[in-house]
Length: 233
Image (cartoon, rainbow, N blue to C red; front, side, top):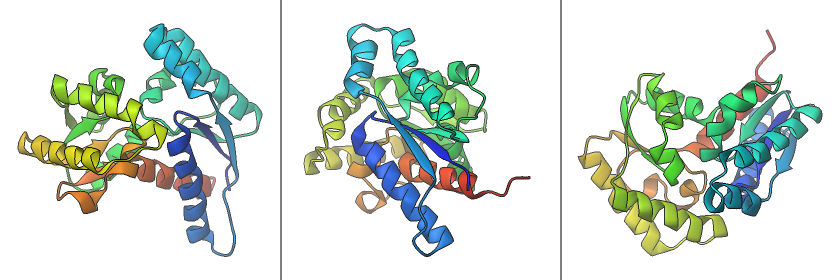
């Protein structure tokens, strides 16, 4: 079994879900009381948010994530998983600094989208994930087109994530609004919706809407376990 390195803390809510699901999936695959060979570097979200939002200092934000990645490499991780969609914008920079690979969440999402035979999806998450191109470009490399919500919708999504979801607050009214948005995005041409924030799947699932959803936390965890348990060539 390969050692999984997890960068967490962005937020602790989704990080806890990563730890739980990775270990559940390993036990399902191997039986008995097996658990994952895993090392976690958990950063202080407030430091990251201060850099990104307050100071608009992308270099500082990237440095926080890179420091965590280096600690995982030093701890013997064979590959790295970041339990946060938007922090994947730093992966190209970090790949040049480390000798171990990253399991990119957008690549894992692309695999799930293509397995379902879809080619156009909506992308919801925080502003950087929706408005920058690091995520949509990665999906485009797999032949997948993306639709992003309108400005007012993006503002709502971003604020609800920051004010509620990362604080472990999941409200029925918010869930209903996300479900309505999923239906609206489908009407605009999206075959499915990528839940491109690792807290969103804790709020809404396919039981809440008829629109196909791509829960990136679950998809990423499954891909991590596949990678950890793959036979070395």
